[in-house]
Image (cartoon, rainbow, N blue to C red; front, side):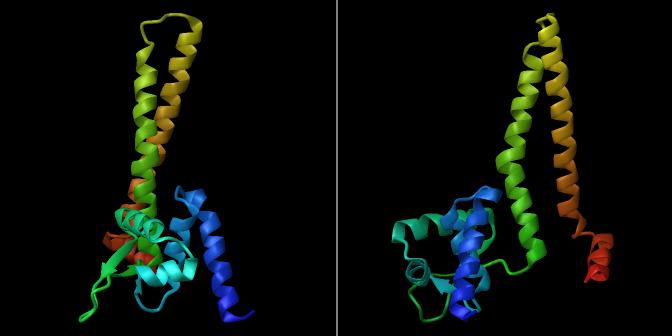
Amino acid sequence: MEFKEAKNKFVQTWGALGSQWGINKTMAQIHALLMIAPEPLSMEDVMEELQISRGNASMNLRALMDWGIVYKEFKQGERKEFFIAEKDLDELAVKIAQERSKREIKPALKVLKEVSSAVKENKTDEAKHFTEQTTKLYDFVLKADNMLEKATEFKDNWLGKLVMKIMK
């Protein structure tokens, strides 16, 4: 397989996977392109490589920066803005997990808490069952979110660093 074909296959596959972790295909393709680029790329480079509009590139680069996985990098003497992706895969995983928690898990917890306490005055069997199940679900999702938070904090403490060093 030629380099250009392999690169295109990676970018396309990463783009298809993007919807699995809560982003659109183009956003994931831009991320893939920046992740494998040896040097920062300009918006024009991204537009040309992916054959997308300036507005699409701009909007998705901004979203990737909001996620904390793409950064602007300035080159002396250049008027263009350049972009680079987070290259540390451990850090990338942490940032994605934190962002997904913020965007998906926290709102779900809020709704579960609200609905599980909303019908407590209703004494029917159906309402009691609803309250029990939504409370159990809230507790489960809360534990999962807490575990996710602990896992993302884990690499920042001395024990986590030791474990990560041993794993490499």
